[in-house]
Image 1: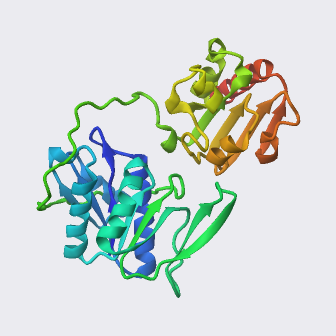
Image 2 (image 1 turned 135 degrees about the vertical axis):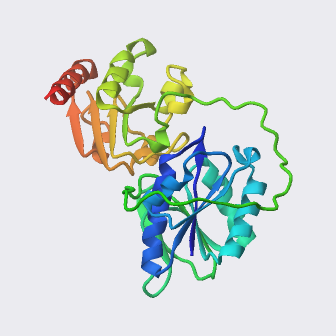
Length: 318
């Protein structure tokens, strides 16, 4: 059986959860088995995971599990894996998933591949592909152990509704006492988090100052995109640090990444070069970013961006 981690926040499943459920179902079909989802903490309508391929949903409805405690979570997985005869565990390659993946590998005595970017090949062996060298190449890893753990890179697979909601089985587990006390949680609300965003508009020092950021926000609003920035911009406090994308910030892989006034240093490219389509706007025709771009516009961003905004609005009005 395949078991996936159904991550949620504020009582709602994350986009990455639907991706791992659908990925888990496809892997289960390859292996002629079923896919189960483990939900830890309080949430309504956990049965909706059946729409994306879950054959079983096991729910531990305990308010103490609303926030990640890796010791408790790993203990929960270990018990379910043993009881349900699970051979492969899949978690999102999110901050929570990154915290769990190594611990799960040790607890289950399992081989592990993090940041998988495709379905495993299971015809003659269990082989998993993941990006290496900051996304410049791909490597194939073979897992030979009976138990396996995979973390799935976001936006690797597009989840589809392939079924209906299913009945949820509420279970009780013998979990250790929490060793982490959550006193306060601060989150940025009202925007799609960068790791989950499919459209991202990003800008750099070419903006000349924070007072000019209005056109970036206007373009993002027109596209329905999330805003981001380069490291020098966040270091200068032009933009909040949670918007910093790149090797030392957040690594993303949206369907569309629009880079405005960013030169394209290797550290920035390392965090965004897995984007499916990259559009670059820069007045320097020699900017390194153009080598990685699918589309490029050489011009003054203060002239180009307003025209893009106008075109997007006209297109949407039609």
